[in-house]
Image (cartoon, rainbow, N blue to C red; front, side):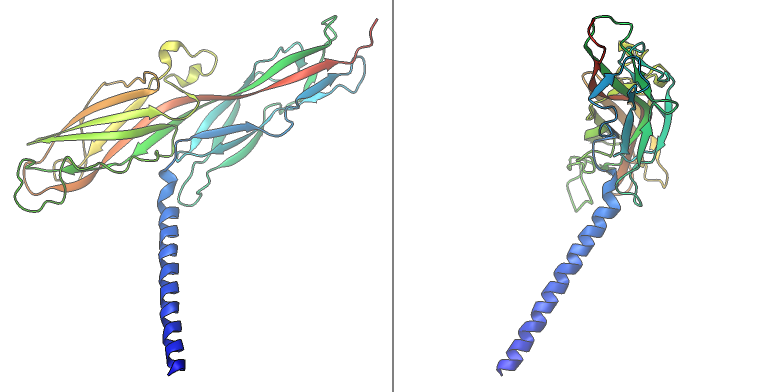
Length: 320
């Protein structure tokens, strides 16, 4: 009898453990499949350790001049591929740190996806032709000087979101069960969309034959949204900051099998203090029952970001 009890207990325990394991596996698979469109970052940029070094010596009159190499790690932590991005190096006196090209360096880096949950990674050397050499011989009496190495990144990016909304042909009817109501909480925007510009909130109001949306947009990253990519980074005007290149918003509001575009304002979105609002109204079906459908939102914009490091250059010249 005691043996039977032990066997039964063991079988029950194995069933519980296997059930929990399966649940965990399902949860993990779901996360892998869906989470790449989460997050609030695009390009992450940082210097490779000691490139450039914090301290450089000018060995005057010798062949042992130290060189300044600038290398940056690039990680695309968003869900959009960057193509034809550009890196620029500035912030220092080119008569002190010489032989560094002023030309932009092009880069491409893939975003996160179902098959690459971490996003693309690359290391780029901005002093590719020749590392910069330091020279203080033209500056008498200068024992040391601080120089700032700034790497600017300019690239185009996109934000896509698909919050689920309710289309109710008869919003005032309270009789009977409905699949949804237009005042339901709209889901699908929390946690960002894998981009530095995110949809933070969508509000809906339904009337017979019409549906209205108020879409809140916010910049979440440390960089700057710019409307004219070709002016980035040195010719960007204050009036161009916060300009969104374009946006499209579509939804199946007519009960058909294809989506339709809404009438949205403003025609050109501009962020003020990193925030903006889009107002859209759609013609909506007046037949059938209520249903849920994605509101497809796509924002296209230029983005500018930078990373910098202060370095010290010391002279080794003998005192007169």
